[in-house]
Image (cartoon, rainbow, N blue to C red; front, side, top):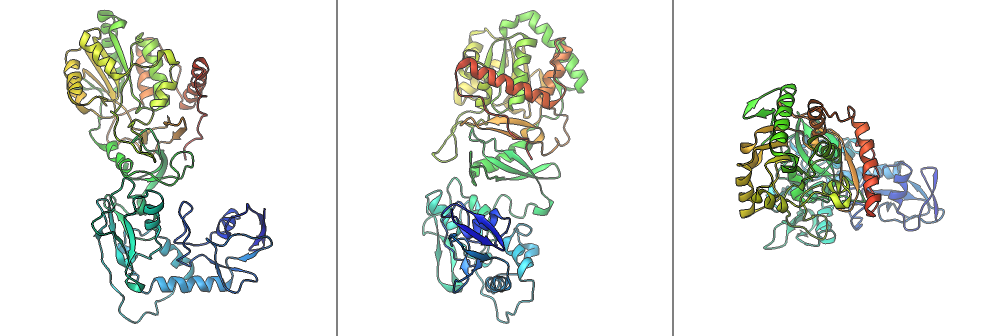
Length: 523
């Protein structure tokens, strides 16, 4: 392990560690544009130049590896002057229009200018103009004048997606990023180049000029687009989610997420159920709990518990599912359990999973292997046979397509009772006698377990806007109390502790893989 000294501090590092990485371990932030830890290192921006004693010239910290006895200076006068010169060169043709740039507030060029080069421009000639608002593909817009040619986007398409759409054309001050002739930047991860771009050259069509970034608040969350459960920054303003960005997690998605996952934020505000309803009439929660308890009691007495089915949603959190199972078995007295959720879609060999539900593994871990919920196709068969007369559904998603989906919707019309407990109405809202609005994952705490068994906690980011929606587990607790079979949960932390204990017990009973460890509280 070579030992080096950086700004007077010694550090031992693994062989092959770069100066930039070693400096970061000591807490020294070496500025850079072209370097990214998940991409190759071209060392072309020269912003990370540092002084290494006995070297004849300044060296790029992103590329230079630490050697035994190396002495490095990252902030002395010679280095600072070099950074100022690099910034001045970059800004020769760069438009100084930060107030109208969509990247303002999260632009590294803007940050470094304020740190190193806050001075008037010496440019006295007309700047070279380049193409503006040029669509590279369906999701990404390019501004050639703001591009600093760091080539992060080119390397991402070459090295991560392997789709090779982008290249650098022309030479000198005419150089620009372009797609190859006859091609568009149209891969499943194209919007990652927007995250990679350190300036305002690449912007997302979806978020472009939508909201100033300094107005956004961010919460650590999980993408619900598929069973991969990519870690994300959920960014919101005025109780509305504005965008999702990937959050680094080496166990799940590293630095990336797919374009489809980024658009799942739209579902959080679409077709929302806002107030409890019985036969279309709105009630308060105390009122609807009382009336729902009476209706459920009457239904149980009329059709028997063997004719009541309960659908568990793999869109729900583990905590909600844990209480849902207790409610179904101990309160309703039914053992007819079925798996709901969204139908499968397309997947790939990188991040996108064919299962479009974030917590199917969470549902499975709530039950020992022999008592797990049956497939939704079994529910359709049982409805057709007439053995089910009442249905309690978590979530409004139907994991069927085509004629099977139409058949299911037709069959629920003839049920004695359909209770829909969900954030969104969908096709089933018109047929539900009782509607109980619940919160989305952005509006509560919870845990998802992904396709690889990794448990991730997520925190509440926003409150439901103009809505009486409640957490699923709170709805079950409220109904159970009215039905005379109280569930012992008043605080989320107690519920979560019991849930993980139950998951571990279920794992031991079935000799399956170990239950996931409880995630750290979401930030």
